Length: 368
Image (cartoon, rainbow, N blue to C red; front, side, top):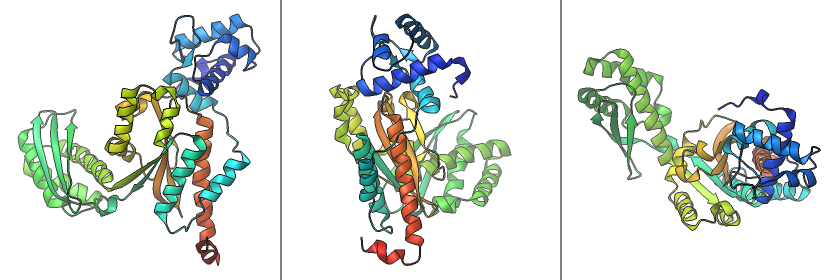
């Protein structure tokens, strides 16, 4: 949701920024006394308290305990990330470590992602993940669409070569009949068996729409919408089946009080170990998108991450997406440092690929 920057005065922005950064550093509620003495906010204690109360009323701050200081809300973090975060300057040690750990043969894509994940976790002190998509090799040997009710059906997909059966419960805003869903099964098996994501093009989709219309005697618009939502589910499933995800620094979660609750920590670690929920979440992100994505708290698709932040960016080599890297941590993570680290990793990988393309660079790089 886009936030209205104009509703906050410069003074409110200054105080909100100071509270977010103090809470990131301390992990405790922030009061007016701290802002005056430590953050050098040049206003009286009464003025700061009034501004904090108004920021709370607007939804940017929360007060966890009576007479305690304030902490940022999800809305406060989102405003900070979108408008207030400042550029992080990497230390000489961090820059050197990043370049050193990314010294590898540029042809070894798995090594690129592995090293990038280690660098990201080491520098930021959060849990890092890398995703390498391999959907082009995944195909299906059987589809089955099962009618549930007028507004939903299940699509069952049996993958070739990976011995996996996947199901998707598809909700629809319009009504369908058992006959239409039965016809959908026939059309899917006739047109999509043995095809990978790269093979399912607009021509195939349009042909499926025409065949579904003919077999079901339903109007073209309804058939087109049903094919569209079905293809989306198939794309997402193929991405999940074909993706490889690795984590680095999961133990770093223990360093933050947000994960001290043993039950919540166990669920978080279980989600990371099972991988599927996180793969499903990140696989929905457009692989061609160059923008860094930030999911704060409840913006995450994975329920157990509703008080965590996921920052995620696709990585490119010679202009082609080779995978992605992400950071998982508490909502009060050091956004400036994390965003800078991910951007630097992305730029360094691109720089090394450019060096690799130079004359005689091949031999020099391969000796590393």
